[in-house]
Length: 415
Ligand SMILES: NC(=O)c1ccc[n+]([C@@H]2O[C@H](COP(=O)([O-])OP(=O)(O)OC[C@H]3O[C@@H](n4cnc5c(N)ncnc54)[C@H](O)[C@@H]3O)[C@@H](O)[C@H]2O)c1
Ligand SMILES: O=C(O)C(=O)C[C@@H](O)[C@H](O)[C@H](O)COP(=O)(O)O
Ligand SMILES: [Zn+2]
View 1 (cartoon, helix red, strand yellow):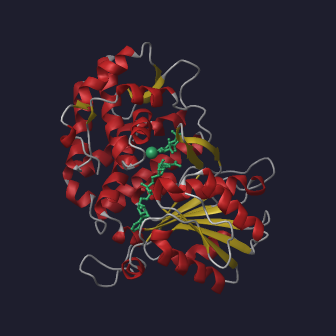
View 2 (cartoon, protein in one colour):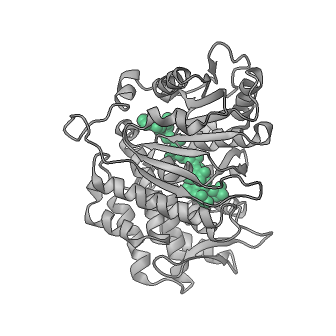
View 3 (cartoon, helix red, strand yellow):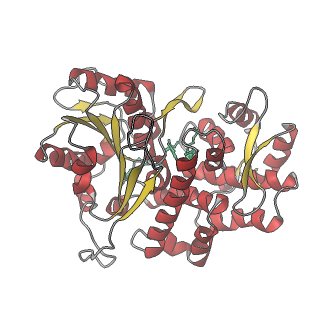
């Protein structure tokens, strides 16, 4: 992957997978009901993350707006101080990116587009460098802004670009996957991968606003929607049991982008995330709970060269964490078993191949929660009771791996 050096006339970083058809994607911008008619649509929901004012008097909070047909609201979220806006999107979302650019142009902004490689390919230092080049060549100043249109990979890298350009410019996230809506776009964690691991370089940089247009979920492949549900389930186990109950009462409706159940799940998960990051934006303690399941998950993603969906890896990671907590005598059997049942009901994986332990342990040792040689995991002491726990001896991790290891490779499949 080597992004194109000359950004004009259209800034495209090469080596993307084939784009989606523009027609199917444009359809995602039109509000529809389950039977295809125009959406009457519930009112948008606004969840504010953080509040109060900083020492310079600046507003600290920002809004996450959730609803249908929201793309047109973008200009008002960017603010009048910006003249130029960089829209960063993957090639697969070119049609949506075009609509966003046109809206911004019509609202009087100079809109520049940077098209980046899809998914984890986009979370690369060369992609960030390509975006910095586009910003530089178009004279972006501190009052200008970046807009991310895409899944979590795009919000992560675009957020990182915004955090680092001139040491920080405004970024507005327009998440187009379930996972990005409920998790990646909210809370200001930005980052890119290195050869050694996932998200090893990054910065905390809160967005100015998040626009979660539920219509974009209509074109999302089912496996991507299900992957996003893993982070929703995470919020269920660490904080909001009602999330688990909604899924248990109808795993099918939880996966239906038209259902009121999915909308409720989205709003509940965002409220969990907003509450945690509002209290601990830079992960000095409480925020580590949002990393539940992620220690093993990131190791799996690296071992799989990012061919597993992040949410699928988080699913296995949560089962591993539940088994670890059970073997340490911290977690009751019912809550541990509930992990497998809820995740399986959604078609998420709960096992991993049995021949990768050394590689996984290497990844686990690079986890950001560790302190020196001390391995630390987020574990539950019960439903809704996460805590970060020091692991006394890595041998317990290997023993726990046996609980999720699957010798028949054919049954250990990602989404
Ligand atoms: N910063 C955070 O707090 C945070 C939280 C969770 C996850 N993440 C990161 O997010 C990433 C995963 O995000 P993701 O699951 O959204 O994956 P992704 O960004 O890789 O997107 C998944 C796929 O869906 C496609 N897509 C996106 N929107 C679409 C739409 N509306 N219709 C059709 N296709 C669409 C994309 O092109 C891509 O191929 C990981 O890198 C993970 O580390 C970050
Ligand atoms: O917001 C957080 O904090 C999280 O940990 C949310 C996670 O779902 C997300 O995958 C995050 O990117 C992981 O962060 P990292 O610090 O482990 O890289
Ligand atoms: Zn995650």
